[in-house]
Image (cartoon, rainbow, N blue to C red):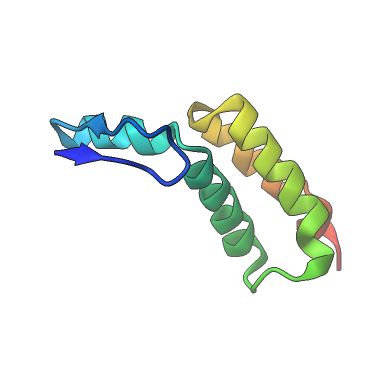
Length: 87
């Protein structure tokens, strides 16, 4: 199976197993940004607003730079974000 992610190069990746697909998706910045956004939305228990954008940007920057292997750190960052701690 050949897959080309929207943000990837013009060369499609070959996926031979679910594991390969997971690695491909885990390394995609668009997927990482989406995961970070979903964790913050879940933690807040509501849709994100414009006031949440600084917290979202911080969480996304962390997750993309440190990678999906740092899920524990992502959760900690979400739970200590201004958006989560604000009344």
